[in-house]
Length: 99
Image 1 (cartoon, one colour):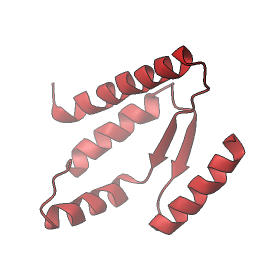
Image 2 (tube, rainbow, N blue to C red):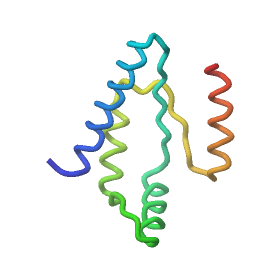
Image 3 (cartoon, rainbow, N blue to C red):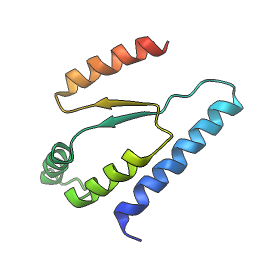
Image 4 (spheres, rainbow, N blue to C red):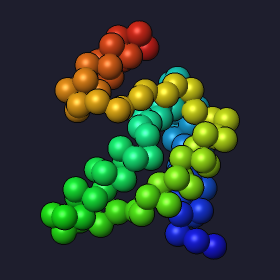
């Protein structure tokens, strides 16, 4: 099994565990996916690698995206193709609708 193929399945398992915890303590759970294009994600990973950090290849990012696109347990998707400030603004607006 390739490294890229294992990550989304692990993520799916973790999403399920968080939902179980929420159910156990009787609180609602919303699964949010923060998405961006494969090219944007690869560019961000390359920038982190230039500073000594590690991360997946563009190919693996594509595999992860495909798996997440098929996931049926994600409630909301927030697209992050702009600045971090824009993402924060979108997240703040989303949180207000959930509370």
